[in-house]
Image (cartoon, rainbow, N blue to C red; front, side, top):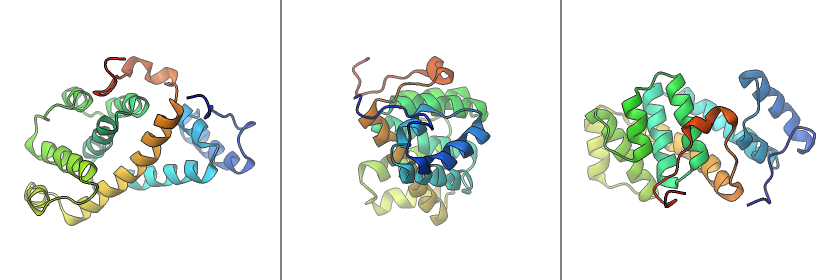
Length: 188
């Protein structure tokens, strides 16, 4: 779709200006996703706020990427899968975990696989997860707080994944080597 261009600060509504500045200060550039979101500055700011709060959760970096990349896979979001593949690599998430998440395969670590399966259940069941799945998640060593943190991470992913579906956001140059074609893309 072309009705959602990647906006520059000069093209975006004025209230997006401070958010653009904050992003550029933090990352040295503005990812295309945020340029698209800039058409609705509250969405842009809300997404960044939720993403920042999720990074403060008690889940470690690998667990956070499992939640995020599982959502990307389930939502078939090529932009976010590429972006999180870069981020997970930079955070030191093992390559085997990243490739398993990109392929929708079982993770080698049983506890982490339980997190992946729980995340899938939350997504597919729209939060109405069975008591058995929840009990299995808790028995694996996760907590009720972690359930709420998974919800937080998925909330941010709805904002970014859905935006990318409407906009067909072009990959940023730094993520092109991690381009991904999901299960529903037919290899496109």
